[in-house]
Length: 76
Image (tube, one colour):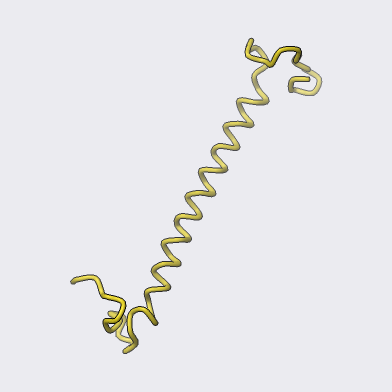
């Protein structure tokens, strides 16, 4: 079946035009999936930054003048 045009009858059978019936629902569904994907990517990035930033106890990549504090678990 071909995709319904904006001015075609809605395939759900409501008798309304597609643009007044299901088009907005389809757009919202797609946007919510995009928002969830963006949120998951941000959370994964934050978790990675947290893991790398606060567990680098033995690396020599600390900024100049910064020392590791075992008491606090981060650089000072």
